[in-house]
Length: 154
Image (cartoon, rainbow, N blue to C red; front, top):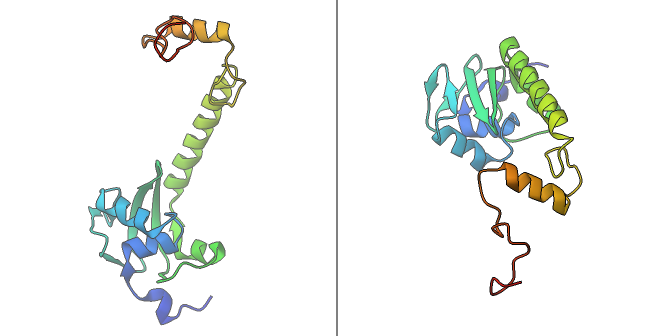
């Protein structure tokens, strides 16, 4: 791909995060930058900060931390194939994301056996609900009295 002046011109960090598909929407990208979840070359920046080819961007968006090197810029969001050419993720960042994904898979597999757990198991039965309530420190919404009615009576 021949690099034109269009892919090398500096562009706002919030626009770049959106065009590179690291953020789903531009307002979410701007919010992440304002919230301090994005650093350019090791510094927190405002949404209007311009990034250029060669900059190092560290972004935590949606609970996922990515460290990328800017390889191109774009004012507009294009296809995913074009967005992938705008940055190069560091090896350490890729390894950390894969480690966290594996950890989530393991946690999900452990939770699969629980009724109503994160694995999308069946709804707990009345007996399961009582066992869960007995084991938890927070009281159930019914206070252990059975079903709730309008006036609090059965």
